[in-house]
Image (cartoon, rainbow over the protein chains, first blue to last red):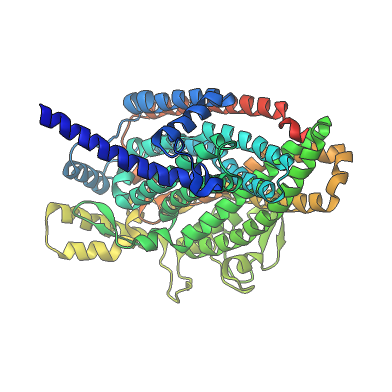
Length: 109
Length: 508
């Protein structure tokens, strides 16, 4: 039990380090380029990215309506249309599909 | 032999056309307005004036509304391939899938990453970094268009593939040939530059509305200045790429060109019809009868457009169906009947291949495969696309293209004096729907003009369509019609509200 927890902790530390390194690189480029090497620690983390997005979403006005429309649209497209109306016509394995199409193409002329 | 109900083909085509045309309402504005706001933001970064920041932010808001409304509308087209056009979908194999996958992975992620930085990063990023984000968002959208147009171009000019009779699929042998086919390059350039024109017309139209209302006049003048210069360059590029598109069509889809020109009997020194009225019910077999009630044509214009020489030979519908003329390759063109015989041979060979007979059939299939689709046609007349729709759409596109060119040049010449001329402002405002009409007309020429083909020469619609019940296709047609109309009304309401609110106070 102890070993498992230790391993998880180690993995988490490595992952966090890796994540921060990536985030540092990305954020140093995107979030505070004018500050060059003086990029603040807080912005140089995954927390910084999360904060960036959280602030952005919180400040949205018209964007909220647009996001609602986008989400509604995606639900209609993927849940309603795809599941009930636009199911793929060809079903089964590739071999079955190939056989079905060959039959169609050679019988329609 | 199992005949397919023609109303099934018509409804399936109508559904695809409806979806594609609605989708295309959103796309060109994203491409065109996107680049204009990139230019405006570049001016802001260069001058440091808050006025340009507010101007950019206003157009970016309209860009965002249009982007949000249009996003994912294209996915329905992909669903339709699998549901309504399953034979086509299987037949094209990975050739169609590869560009769409690249589009999904590269372009979509590029857009998705940078659009957040663009909208959320005004106060958090440096000026140059924010400008880079804006450019990357627009480049991402343009890359998306590239891959979609590569897939579309392959349907018009199938290259870089080999047909595998075992799997009944086309297999890609050269990604470069597919991605960089001359038709794809021209189509991309023509489509994107014409979208820039639409974006420019949108900006000058909205700005003209502010001038008519006497609001935000400095902002409107500045926007018109940028958009009309950009629009003029874009319109000139559209004309140049349109010419190249004509050359490509003459080479690879001569029937489309003949239909677009109402040309029944071809020849050398063929004139280009500028304006004309087609006589209804003309029979292609009797081209001696003048197919026009009246026409004004540019002498040798079509020969010039198609062959880059004033005396070049351009085949008409009758010549293409009867064959016998000498093509660009120096060979005598086969007649439609001959092509249909080759096609039937190819289909019979495929049938024998599937029954497991010897390799000779594979060779027969390979030899006749370039005419595979002709084997499904019953009469040569089926090869003639709807002439009137193609002819008039082509005129709408070209005449409006010329009008936009003149509009932008006029706006640049007149400058700020335009504010005093109310009828002209009204005309500019009313040009916005005309830009959409020109853009959609271009697609009608491209897609109606290539009928009856789903894939040029290889697969007609009657073979590509899934054997569904007509009723189910009608049902989904009306569902999409309602859904897209609601979406369009929502976009218009939100867009009009945003326009009525106007730019931020720095622009007032």
